[in-house]
Every structure is written in C-alpha cells, then in structure tokens.
Length: 365
Image 1 (cartoon, rainbow, N blue to C red):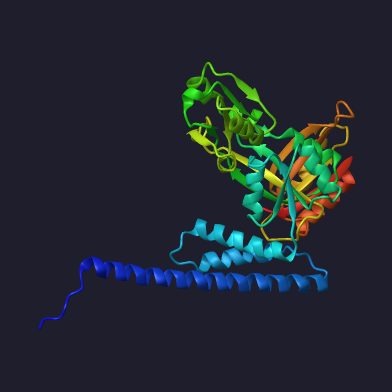
Image 2 (tube, rainbow, N blue to C red):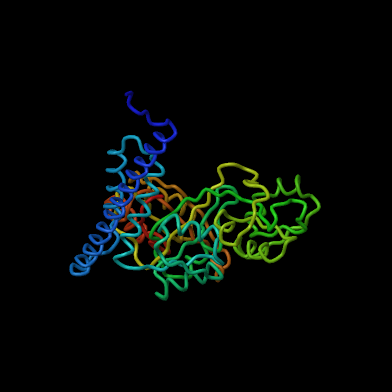
C-alpha cells in the first residue's frame, strides 16, 4: 500500500504553526532578558547611590551603541538603534524616575522631541510657555525641560535664547528633530476646511503650500501645534498643522501629509537641567558671553578660541533688554569643558570678557 501523502495546504499550515511557535519562544526569551536587564540596571543604580555617582553616564551609553552597531550583521541599523535607545532609556530611568517639561499641550513637537530623547518611560509635563519650563527646572520642581532653540528654515527661537539670559540652568543634551507638517482635521476632507490654525512657525514654513492650495481660507496663529490639534478635534471646520503624535493623540485624520515648503526642515531642541553630564567623547559646549565696549572685541574673543583650534558651530547675538545697546553672544563649540583646550579657552574668556557664563557641555545629537 502506498504511503499516505499530506495535503499541501495542511503541510503549509503545519510549517507556519511551527515557525510561529519558534517566534513565540524567541519573544519569551527576549522578554526574560529584558526583565533581567532592568533588574541589573536597578542594581547598578543602588551601587551608584552608595558611591554618590551620577545615574547617567553618556560615555558608557555611546560605547554600548557603538559596540552593538559593530556587532550587527543583518538587522537594519536605524531600527536597531531605536530599539536599544528605548531599552537603555527605560533601564536608566528605572534607577531614578525623571519628569520632563515641554511646551504643551500634549503632542507638540517639543513633546515629540522629549520622547525621542528619553523614550516612553519618562513622565512628561506640558507647560504653557518656554519661560515656565526654565523656571520649573531652575526651581527644581521638574528634573528636565525640552525647549526648541533653532529651526533650519525659520532660524532661532528667541524666547529660548532670552530665557537663558534670565534663568540659571544648564544644557544637558540636544535633539535634532526632522519636522514634517501635516494638515489634519476630523474628516480628512479638504473641502470641510474653513480655518487653518497652528503655531506661527509651522504656518510660516507652509505659507506657499497654503497660498496655492487654500488661498481663500483664513489662518490663525495659536500658542502651539498641540493647541491647534485640540481646536481641530473640537470643531469640524477647523484644520490644524500638527505633528504625527497629535494625529494619534486627538484622533484626527490626515488631509495632506508633508505640506512644508522646503524639505530637510529640522528643529534643534535643547534639554535643560540643573547639572550637565560628564564627558561622552562626542560633545558640545555652549557659552554666553558679553564683550568689552571697544573696537575689535569680538575678534579678540574669537581669536582666543581659534588659537586653540576650537571648532565653533554657532554664534548669535541677543540684546540685553534692560540695557539698550548692549548684547550678549551665544556660542556653541565642539568638545567638552573637561577637554583641556576647551577648559583653557573658557578660563581665558572669563578673564577677558565683560560677562561669561558656561551654559553646559553635553553629548552631541
């Protein structure tokens, strides 16, 4: 008697079931290892408490990422980095929970920058103004604040620069967030739109698209993209220019995705706190300096840095509101205050400038 042959469909179903069982077993193993990792992270936190050491070691975290990328064979690199960023952040925050203030309400780009930096394990607190974020951090009522400082198209966020001049905080990190502006409303239909609302910067970054596609629809500036999304969620004739996070948070529909006039739109955010982290090996340092009132003062200041081969990445002036005609300069440079050439340059600037403040040294984005 000939052996009974299994039906091809049944054979495929059996193979699929076996493969899925293998995936389930791998998932269980990953979960067990994640639980073990967070237990070890908590133990490290207790050891650091005994030695009075900082919970965050940027150099150690950078070394972990570099080791993983070097060992990686076939897994796509960017998802790999994203996965381990979430794992590492969650384990670090298990040692000490932190809360992060951002320009609210929920689902603004500042909120999105915070999630990109800390993952989903931190506690996020929406605040009404950038000045409020600085004050809450300075008073110690929140651990960190995420504030926008410059946009690749619209330039500097002057309210953030001005807040550095009046509040005592330190820069702890930076995030570069690719900005995609979505036109959203309740229905997803452009014909329902009678008003477009958003923060002033997104409206400016989308002005050509709006002029071409919604020429007769008025625009209204509101406090943030989150407020705009809230308005759109309440009123069917209102459309908002908002973040991808706002779509999920306020259950909105995308009318048109990516309506910004120029590609490559990026906003740089700064993480502020009360103490800058230790050296990571790939860092930036930020200063706030005032110049003596004499010809060539700016050139003298820049020469102090140039003779030590210090690479500047940004310099910008802001007026001192209480003293007409007086300006302070924001300077960003590569490397950390713990590096000899940066420390020596800063020591000389302290002696030669009318005003000097070290705003912080922190890992580069």
